[in-house]
Length: 375
Length: 197
Image (tube, rainbow over all chains, first blue to last red; front, side, top):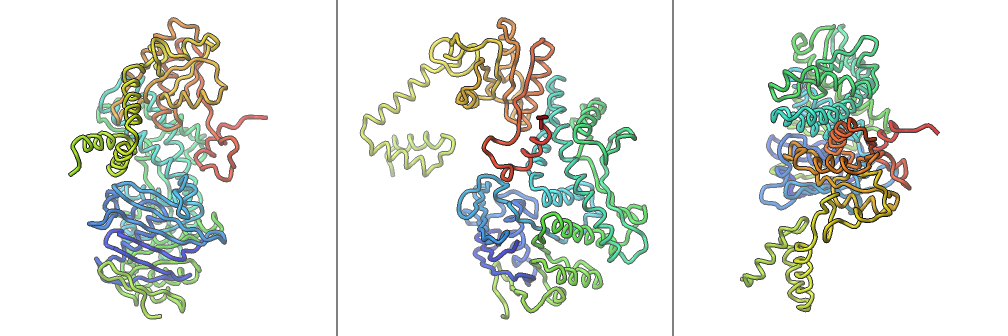
């Protein structure tokens, strides 16, 4: 896939932007607060329908404007297609070639993107919710149906928690226990499938950049399960996981009922990141922690490219200033060798020069305006 | 600026689902421009609907008079009952002309977040109805989303002990649909629910 042209209108602080990206690196240079990240987010939102930063959808619309529109012309499997997303009154509509898309599958058809932002670098140190969100983004990139499935689980969970708080009759709660168990087992199988594909690649990537003999491990940790040894989490099929979750929900009901909160299920899980068998959160240096995230992202790119048969579009938001020179050099060399189409933002062009080539498109971002530089 | 009666009409029209302020205004102007008979007929039709259409006291579909035509039709089977969320779902199943049994309309699904519990749906009426009719099988045809699924599970737990057969409509690839274009969640469900040939 290739992005041929990006048009942004009234998205955050960008009033009207037109970008013709390079086949390889496109580098947006600008001071903080000028709109670099907004440009990247517009592209990310177009490709995933998820904002990079949390908040209400209406916040994507430029202050004073009625609607925000992001349009991309892509080359997908040899055919040019225009996909477009519009945000108005806190709701979004999606278009393919000017027509309202009939389904998200039609809309996403073949567009894949991996984003890397400074927030990602704190994922090792931060709480499990950050790691789950980080993981879920990768799962969605690999399995677009996960968007729907993840939402179904979140909805079932909210409903069940409401029933717990209301102390609803047991028969009513039981119906939602089962609905939650079914949706939860689906989330587990998706996350597990991704981790199976990714953890080996991530460990290998870490070896190249970790600057330590200790091996890194990336492992999904389901919380509060008591699966029998003959049927561990990695081997249980979806039906068995659903049955087990149902049983665990029942076992924890007395306590959960008191707290009005469901304490077991995919929403309570974590990703364990370990260096030489010890928690990276507690024992790895800051540089090593960042290497974990970098390794994960490299693994994600390689994995998507193996699964899709082509490289995803890569978006990097001011990551270079957060990495030490050696790891930044590795990343820049990786990007330039991968042949992937990349959009980078930076406050300092010299940091990313190693990823640039003859055909790099340099953009300068200032006060919500984006201008092509140089060539 | 515009006369008050026109403003009132626009305000009422804008309350309709899917109608915004601008569309409401366009509709109001259209009514104003049309021959007066049309507007009178429209308002008459609205009044008639409100005055004469009731919920059928047996299946809770729409009826004019006592029972709805589906409940009074002697050719339909009393042994099979199809439970649906709303009248629109009933109509969709009727259009297939495949189903010869009777219906029961719940008027919603169990949704704690929206404050809809078993008491807000026509579930008690369904139980009462089973007591005095020869129903052998109940087909639960709620939507395959979280709430529809939970409602189906609730009904199953409630009805099974009464000695009646409970089934759920199948989920999978639409007829005439291409596998290639099926969304992944549907495809995954269809694979799970595969049958031996």
